[in-house]
Length: 150
Image (cartoon, rainbow, N blue to C red; front, top):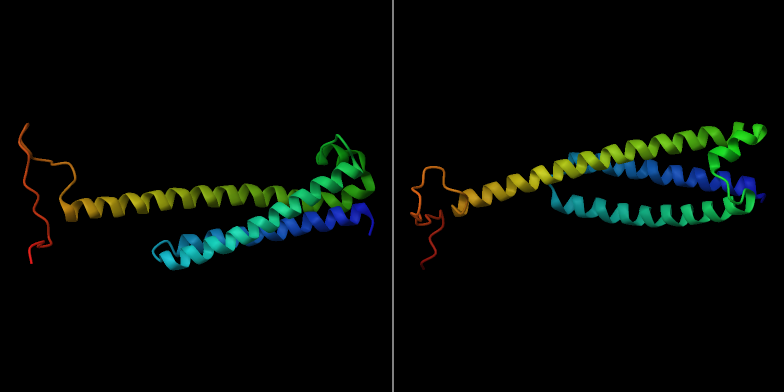
């Protein structure tokens, strides 16, 4: 197989990995309340990330053979015939990475908000949160919802 064809295949493999990560990222948004499903999704993401890392290493190696010391975009600008084959994949890959970053940022924010809500709820149950109407210097006795005496 020619190096150019191998590079194009590798870029397409990277694109498939990123598309799969996008799908899993969207699934996370739907299943934030199910920690078991989140764990399964995260395990799937880890496996895909390993494949993506392998494809990226292969892409770098192939590209160093084809155009040492150049960037992919600069190389494509000089290669008219190859640009027709590579440009669509490269552009889709770049936009998929941008979209993946946005989905990951949203998921990070949603998970942080969910964690804050859980902490708030636990503080309410334990009455260990800040007191709104407490007197200065006076420590309120904790009134838990659970009776600890047996």
